[in-house]
Image 1 (cartoon, each protein chain N blue to C red):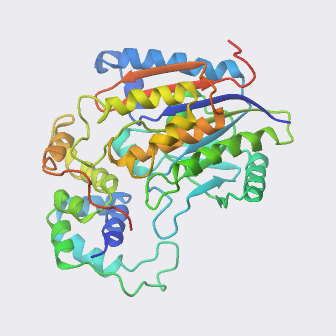
Image 2 (image 1 turned 90 degrees about the vertical axis):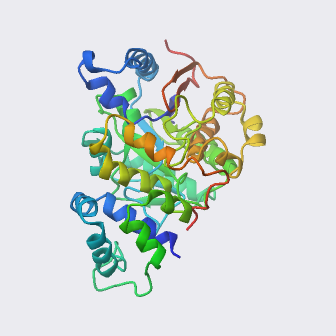
Length: 287
Length: 119
């Protein structure tokens, strides 16, 4: 059976690419610390020696649209082109192309449906920065095949937080029941408190530093029950109007498991968001 | 009122560089053209399969013609779509982060709960 060699949860910041590739003299003052922390984070994936990446993210109204909106979707295709015109325009992100792992995608779809997750699928998916940002931070060679899993954290009505956790638990079990000798890293990105398009956007810190500290502790300690007790679809409006992206972190807590402490935890305070990085090693820390 | 149609406008103009520029240069022309030509376009079907019932109300037309992001927020247009498009329209006229912060200050009167963005 396949082995889950690492579980990784991260914020995705579309400006990391631009910040880390501009000439050093032009970089903003926070760049050096940010880049150093990302490089340490990257080592946690490299040390796990993955063959395949399951990538959990959320399309930001790039390909998926309100005329036909899936809640959870698996991409099954031999390749995925990546990044959209408006992401090149606003964030300076490059066009990319990633290989797909169709056997694992087919397994997740079949097994997921049989576990009562009515997963949508796409055979022609262009992926956006929710998946390319962690490729850029964690595996800039972009040389491993992926299985993208998209969640709807963006276009209400949204699934309940407990469904994100349950899907995460199921993804872990499904990967571990895949008949393969390959080593799979499961990587998902979301947000802590975040406001976009409202009065609290782009402040000196994230819109709700208290929520952020609490959220980091929930994730780092694997406190799924504590998190589910406090977080609801309604409560996530208060820390910032884009904070429902935190549910992708909850999905990853489901992958990592109840009460399982992360082996690597790092945070960076940027001017409008707290960035946070977590790695778990189910088979023991290889470093 | 159609939050969906407002979102459809923002979505389709933001993703197409030609439409983005037309919206910046002549919003009155672009909004009228878009409502006549694209409001009823079902993006996943051939042009023949027109949707027959989608139209803006007058206040929505006004908000779009006047690039009024505060009114769009109040109407429940998706804030991510509005922000992304408006950054494309106006960031170039300002210093770093200046436009994004002014955009936020124009919404300072807003209190929670924010307008419902469900469609």
